[in-house]
Amino acid sequence: MGFSGAFVMHPPLGLLYASIELVKHGIDVQIVDTRLFPGTWREELRKIVDAGTLAIGISVMSGKPIKSAVEIGHFIKSLDPEIKIIWGGPHATFFPDTILTHDWNCDYVVCGYAVQAFYELVHCLMNNIEPSSVKGVSYRRGNDIIRIPRDDTQFEFVDYKEIPYHLIKDFKVYGQLDQDKRIFSIYSAMGCPYKCSFCSAPAEYAKIKGRQWVPLPVKEVADHIGYLVEKYNANYIYFIDNDSFVDIRHVESVINEINARKIKVGLGFRGARINEIKKMSDTFLDKLADAGTDILHIGAESGSDRILQLMNKNCSVRDIIECNIKLSRHPGIIAAYNFIMGIPTETLDDIKATRDLMFRLVEDNPNCIIFQPNKFRPLPGTKLFESAKKEWGYKPPETLEEWSNIEVEGDFSAPWYTGEMKKFCDLMLIGSYFIDNKINKVTSGRTMFYKLLRIINAVYGPVARFRLRHGIYQGLLEYQLYKVITIIVAKYKKAGFRAT
Image (cartoon, rainbow, N blue to C red; front, side, top):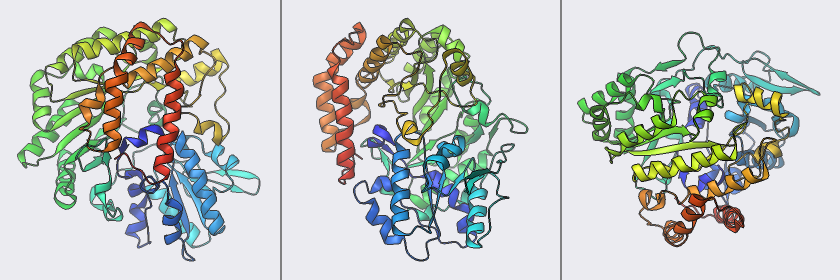
């Protein structure tokens, strides 16, 4: 998961979903989360791979996880070349040809929702049938790549009672930072109705029949939460909806149901937009906090009105500032802001405006958090992807090696980056770790790793904030040191060290 994997590790929900139909049909499934065995994952896989192993399914995101997937596939094939390797997940959904062309250890790719498709593919493999009718599957036939179109006209809803949580042997190993939370990620809604020009969601849901945002039944969401609390001692529920607050009444109804059942659990929301927060009353935010909500992840994205308009964010910088001031009146809820840097046509002045907004948000709301800004990468099907190709001659990565470098810490650049902008983006990345004193807000420093981070924050934090506030990116040796640190952390993880 790149450098962020050193800080956050939630249970692999995607693998559980992909296993639903297999488990229902009595097929033996075992999950190996290689993040738990950074230095010994080969030994863990060797324990379960035997003559009866039919296939290994790997869930893959773009960036660093690609390198891991390639390593896993190569290792499995070294044990038994007859075992089939199947890639799924976000990267597989959008770039199946890249995988099958450049990784000959991968035999099949499953695009999109995988609950039904993965089972049907495994059924074909069990019966030695070519999966030519399995929607969403791609594979090689000789030198040709066969692509079976997926059904992208409807959401794939699942019954939470069928999620095979029992495949996870120990939930205590998961968490984030050094917080004492047993976190379970769930959905309360499917889809997203917005048209952000940088986001893959509009393309992903473009063919959905009917509404592109569908809230799950309130009773079902509350049942799911109650089930996790009672059976697995969950003390924190993280809603991973694309957007939870399209209809604020839905979230309020979920909270009312949780309160009525007297379920005691913490809550966090991944998706919230400024135009939605504008509609939230102080009474609603009080209710949100009283229900156990301690964080809202908010897409602020930019400090430039021009860039916000280009992104189709339906808000202004003034809106962001006013919403942040509103949230400051509810200190129990951490406003956690996401930003993107490197949008096509973005200028150095635009990026500096984002820097200024970051400082303004922290000043107005000392309890807020500024996440590390993401480096924009053009995703196929998005409006900005077409613009990048047409106006800037952008050529997307063609190999898995190139895709694995698409990380905020990677060396990815684009035709619209000037040398000065690249350096300032590096400064933004380093400074964002210290701009809000976040390490002291979200960790108690229980482990040696986080104690060290708190010391670094105390010693270097003032320097980082001074550099960022005044735009001093010249001689940014800290960025090179940062890259070295990411490598060191990765080596510690490979040796068995886990920050969490």
